[in-house]
Amino acid sequence: MPVMKDKELRIVGFLCNWCSYGGADTAGVARAEQPTDLRIIRVPCSGRVDPLFIVKALLSGADGVLVSGCHPRDCHYSSGNFYARRRLEVLKHFLPALGIDNARFEYTWVSASEGQRWQQVVTAFTRRIHTLGAAPGFEDAPLLMKTADMAPAPLRPLGTGKNAPLESLKQAIKEKLPDLACVIGWKQGYDDAHTTPLFAKKPEDVDELVWGPLNAANLAVYLPLFKGKKVGIVVKGCDSRSVVELLQENLVAREDVTIFALPCEGTLDMGRVNEKLGRYNVVGGIAHGATNITITTDGQEHDFSMAEYAQNKCRGCTEPEAVLSDVRMGDSPLVQGEAPVPQELALLDAMNLDERRSFWRTQMERCLRCYACRNACPMCVCRDYCISDSRDPHWMTQEAGVTQKLFFQTIHALHLAGRCTGCGECQRACPVGIPILGLRQHIARTVGELFDNYRAGIDPAAVPPLLGYEVEERNIREREWK
Ligand code: FES
Image 1 (cartoon, protein in one colour):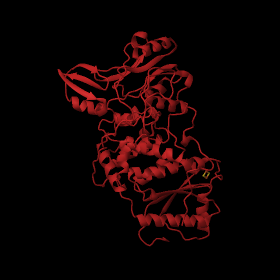
Image 2: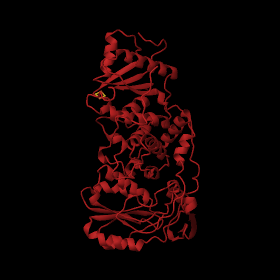
Image 3: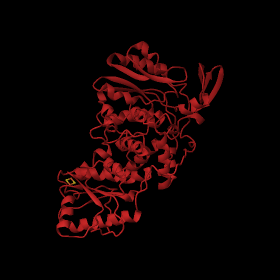
Image 4: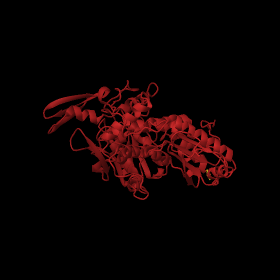
């Protein structure tokens, strides 16, 4: 018999087989009165509960989701609930970024003998969901288009790398090249105004290497493809963090990679550059000043100052120098001040839950599901085994609906939790300019707040927080049930 008098809502419960499922059973045997809204899914351990189960349930129409496992230190598999606690806490902080009230999700611990506690938990959670009412959907949220403000003043002077010791770097690469399968860098692309990856295998290939604000792509994305081979890579400061993260996760071996670095003076936002260039037939040339570049198309000159046309991420960048390198040249510009809140994140912060739901509905209407964001991401390493492509289990349908697209973005964001180095390649690769970096930045901030200011890709010896746990977490407290 329902404890709640009004209509039942859809609440999904993931219960550990060894404790909470037994606790629910104990409550039933004792004939403890309980609400009947909960639909229980029995799992072998709370550690088996992927946060994506919860997001999928909420995006598919659940009004609330409850996860319950064994008390800390009582896990049947000794540590499954310790891992779960970190992941679920990060998810709890992340849901509002999507526009989902995180009161609709809770996790807790109930042992097999705690029938009374189970009754208390399920009654309190069901009452909470009834107070919130049926969950609002994304498909029918009103449309809301917002764009991030222009970036603040940069933390360091932005330039074009005109005086970087490129020739000395080429010489150093040529000296190391005989021991390497190739060196990854940038070369001129289909015209002077664009660059493309260079895979230098011969000394004459190295002569094609270019350096400057057109080198926007993060080449670390190619490193795992060379696993087991000795390879060199030229990096900007932000790219070096991705290399470090790959090292942290043993996706490349330190002895296999030689890192060449020059201090970065910023990269151009090619979306805005191309917008200003408009349609043209031929690039007549490109000239580098100290703080601006001039691109000539069809005989007309276009000037781009770095102060105005740099990527947003470059303004808040605190690592113009590589965090790890084997060959480093040039002087790094002095960084002054604290990194500001990134624009995409500030945009999310300024909205309430309803606005965020409308915002993401509007953005996802534009998403093409081209997966360019995933393919450009240096930390998306599953390649052909990405779960968003999987038919078994079938995580996502082929529908072009808003919730499927948002679910895909959530998969990407949550798989980067504690791993995203903020390089922004996902957003840069997006052909329709969806500010998806904000979701990654939101999680990165949460991870920093929960785990001692952790930042991905800084320390090669550090264990990413979601790959570890502490028995007594300093910043995660169990919530009380009343
Ligand atoms: Fe119950 Fe791990 S076995 S939480």
